[in-house]
Image 1 (tube, each protein chain N blue to C red):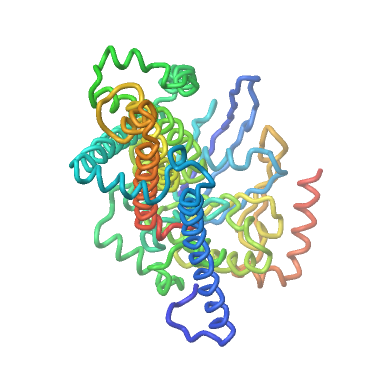
Image 2 (image 1 turned 45 degrees about the vertical axis):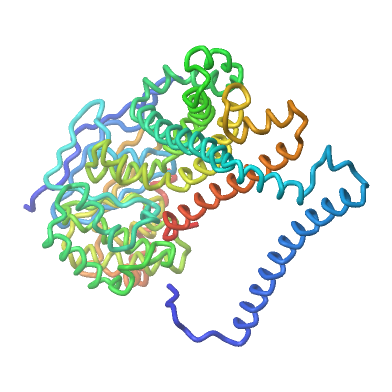
Length: 271
Length: 245
């Protein structure tokens, strides 16, 4: 029942100031830690404490990025992996959501398919590698499929359990108003599962990267996963480290996009 | 004779589960007339909620018939306001469900909310309101479609004592001044006495109507005033004995 724009007490001002100070401290420590790691890494290779051939170094990573850029292959590899990951992610999320809806709608269908989903969930998807190569060839299609199946089952199970967990009393309330099943779905089940949808997106960001990189390990002639495997095979650890670092940045970026979406979608809900 | 709004004739209900069947209600017979406020009390787990579900048409009786003359509005123990909707949008929910979201009906619902002190909170979210205000919003939501009969399933039991007395007062006043027929389910004897025109006592499972009392408070419908009257404790004693007898 609070109204905005009230004048705060001096104590509240101190409280806010303390919070701000704490935030500044946490962020400076975070950045400081990163700089410290990079600095120690660079220093230990410069001074010869560790072999930079084995562990690379920040400066060598910088040089590798520059040379990839000069070759014109940097954005080609990043683009390939990013495209595979994003398309696989979107496909897994959309299909998973749709299938979960269908399973929520029909209890019979849910009971019939339950053991299949459980088994598919437990199956390590990489075991399907050879089959995928034979079915889809060695191009992007195979990697997309790998990304899709890695995320799909997780998306289905996560959303289905959220749909089923819809408050029974709220369903009762809607039924007492004479709501149809479709109305219960659109007015209650879908909006009340938005927080679960967001957490599913967060999980699936990780799943999509696992899928695309795993896919590129098995097949492919391009992408960051390919660079990592290739770098490992020819002992160019600079290349491995560089690709890994770029992966870190991309995955973090994608995760933050989801967090941004979360802020847009659930700003008004009860937390 | 006033119009009968709700009529239970020899209603029995059996619940079926994997482990067997349970008789939840047996030979329930009673009627509720237009404008009447009827409270049903019974020992816990006697199937009070079952009775409301039957009245609302959410359950079909195994035997007997339930006749409804007019529309029902259901109010639950918790407010069940949707947290992602503002109070205003929550109040429009039944209009959306019944596809009656006309400008006129929305205006009616808004006017009700303003009349009963929710005007300043229409754009608030439920989490910003106190328990009592939320329950009041839930009542306005129930009234939005102008139902003929209100079915109240222990609507005060989730509130703390102080709030409960206030909300009981509010709800009673709103229901009486809107001239609604109401069926209240409760396990709280004094709540039943303070609100109702007539009290039905249910037995343990399977639920049967064991006693019916027409309360004699004359014109006094205010719950707090009733609690102060001398006949209040007399009724309490009678109903207490019947519940535990």
